[in-house]
Image (cartoon, rainbow, N blue to C red; front, side, top):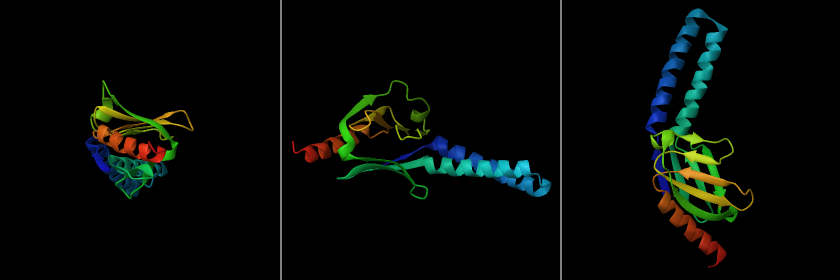
Length: 155
């Protein structure tokens, strides 16, 4: 199963960052200031990060759950089924920025919020921490994951 989620807020943010980077590059050519050049490169790099997170593909097959960016196919999160103890879906009372079309990803892969009011929670065996993925098709993903876990455990 593959789910594609887009974040309009991230696309708009990336476009704004690219415009700022372009304006900074133009200023840096005219002024020759090292500070303006550094700012232009930093904003350009930020816009690439925003583009990488603007749209994601969440897929589950017989081995693992993967979240990849549509931009260059960068891997954002990968969870192997043998590491998953349990799967559940929770309702999010206040979707916040993630529900409004933003993306929030922790550096250690513990939380990925794209869109929707449902949260797919993966209880992990080895770390004891939960991996949380907020997408609109959380229930369908949970069903696929539960089925794969049952096949793995021979139930």
